[in-house]
Image (spheres, rainbow, N blue to C red):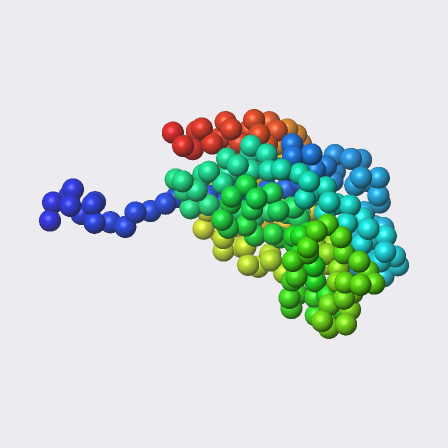
Length: 243
Ligand SMILES: NC(=O)c1ccc[n+]([C@@H]2O[C@H](COP(=O)([O-])OP(=O)(O)OC[C@H]3O[C@@H](n4cnc5c(N)ncnc54)[C@H](O)[C@@H]3O)[C@@H](O)[C@H]2O)c1
């Protein structure tokens, strides 16, 4: 067999790109980040709205807080960076792992999106079997009195609160480990265990960080840094990857 024939018969390999996104990914869609607002998220103390203790103490406040977040997210649109990530699928095998609870990656057209911290467009039981089933929410509002899970407990947002376990973590370790290219975008890498995920990529993986405050973020020294907002940085990297 000639060398040319051998090459022709090899299966086509699509490079694997894993995108690991955080709140900054959606900032240019008008959804505020967490740490950029002085430790308060939209004038709320995180401990009063995003912990299991908060739900126990004041479920109505928590439900209303997420109803407002959900309405903002429904009204928002994917930005150019979300769109470019979806377009990478033309040439690459792309998986998105997001810490975001919004659904803007899906709405931009990304086919495979893992939500580490849940998806605000879904609800789950507030009882003991929370991970058994997720229910799509019609519209923006969950009602504490009327929206009851089949198991008899009120439905709560399908989001991972501070202090709760992250069931998706183990699922995405092999995904990130298989990456040829890792793109980290719009995350301060301050929230654990999510931030620890980046250490599961292989030594041969080509890694990029896109963040306007990249110089303040703790990353391994071999990373390529693009100190830009998501749209500008992703445009730059998209052009390079598609060359
Ligand atoms: N959109 C969302 O769903 C949303 C919004 C806020 C917070 N959260 C949650 O809060 C937690 C916060 O952790 P985190 O690390 O994702 O966010 P973070 O708030 O800790 O950090 C945000 C990062 O985004 C960067 N950033 C700000 N504007 C940007 C832009 N235009 N383009 C690119 N980057 C920009 C900041 O420099 C910072 O490094 C996450 O777990 C996430 O689930 C989600």
